[in-house]
Image 1 (tube, rainbow, N blue to C red):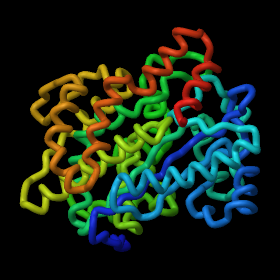
Image 2 (image 1 turned 90 degrees about the vertical axis):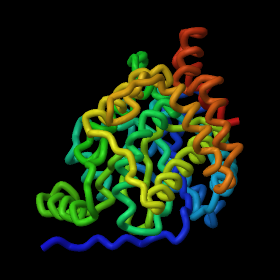
Image 3 (image 1 turned 180 degrees about the vertical axis):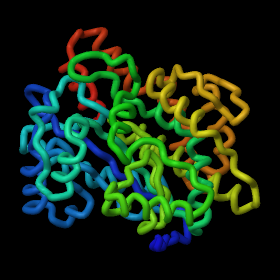
Image 4 (image 1 turned 90 degrees about the horizontal axis):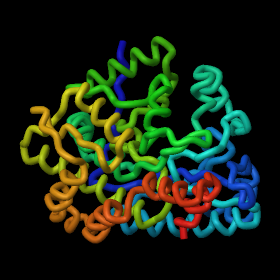
Length: 374
């Protein structure tokens, strides 16, 4: 028998953001396994913020989490407040906060696992690939008011996967070398057995059957162990977009949050109006993911089911113009417009490469990313 999966609908398109940051040593620039000390400091000096500062798989990571927000500005203000608290604590610990998809030279073998059965079980199952997960990202939740909208919106959001990944790509280096990819993180994370691109289901019943199969065969014990790049979060009443690499500063984070919020809400409104949402075949979505991970903002993407192709930045320019009225209604018009600043300034992967070309030093790359937090 297939157990139903209740969806706790959100009456309005609420917003929540989870921002993963690495901890790096102030002197060496290497990753620092000091999260346990940080959380002890939070418990002692800032216990009122404990719910907004989360542990992750490895002790080199901290995740800043918003409450339920209505607008991009509210979410960014929430994160800025938590960030201020955390930076005061990390300063005393001799570590910096580092916002990118990967670290340019850290070695997996020196990283410590966060205590907890769930993390230990993940590593036991995934072994070498699990131990390699020195990666950081940003996850964004958008509230959906009806369960039956979730899967059509999710499938249609895959059309915009390469846009979000190209803008946020910040993981060009691995173990001291340039990988040739704008987002090596995207390629790494999909190696985990339940990660990567989502399946495209036609109805909620298919999704429930899939989850039942996963549980019956022991692939997962809990629905949260489905780690797709875009996934339903039924207990929160949201679609969770997990496409983006780690982000180094609040300004670019605001741009990506606004774009994600506008995309989901636009699709929701179109669906409510009776429109059949555009979808792309899984093999085209997969190719677009690879192109964006490989080439970033220089990617030529497949833009529709008819296999028309276009430079991702050209498509973004048109997309931003089309979404401007949506952004106005969501009070994030200025944040959405700042997506264009990422293209003008260069995405993080481009800035990191420029630093390395200029200095020849991976430690200077770390320093440049740390400095961008401001």
